[in-house]
Length: 209
Ligand SMILES: C[S@@+](CC[C@H](N)C(=O)[O-])C[C@H]1O[C@@H](n2cnc3c(N)ncnc32)[C@H](O)[C@@H]1O
Image (cartoon, rainbow, N blue to C red; front, side, top):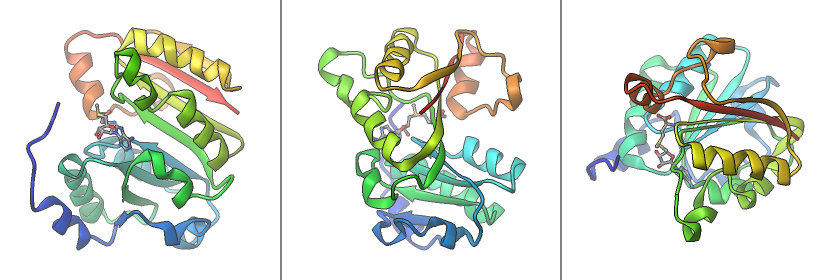
């Protein structure tokens, strides 16, 4: 779903102390920014932020960073982050391709990717957030033993993703082709709500490096 362009989205987010834009100065300093040594979980493609805000409010001993490139969606996440003012949640408006500019080696404990664009055409596959070229970046910023969890409605994309995980050296801890909405404290995202309401099965994979 492409959201209408909002000329006010970026200026509004620039006034929001919970949102960083391309924060190269934070690389290697995220624990300092959160003010503690708690684990840091990164969500990539956070959209309107429901998953991140629910996760952060339910888990105060984990720090969360929600990353998203689309200001038109992320401005709603930014509003929520400011309203809730949680000390363990920040947003970053940027593209995942630039992760190594903002995170140092082993700075992240877990990565979540929820309902990212499946890019079905062969020539588009390299844009997939689970493509091996992204997994290479994730492996660098994740601690040894760091995990990646991914959910999607799209079965062909999911099957490719499971293969990408295996080919990139991730050990599969869980593969589920019909994720129960309540399994292991699953936190439902905006897109997940939409797909579940249409009876679409949700695929889930968890891997560890
Ligand atoms: C289909 S939406 C899902 C949003 C949310 N995760 C959910 O489940 O409701 C996928 C999101 O990933 C973002 N995205 C896709 N590629 C990205 C990239 N390379 N860097 C940052 N965000 C990206 C898109 O802008 C979009 O907001």
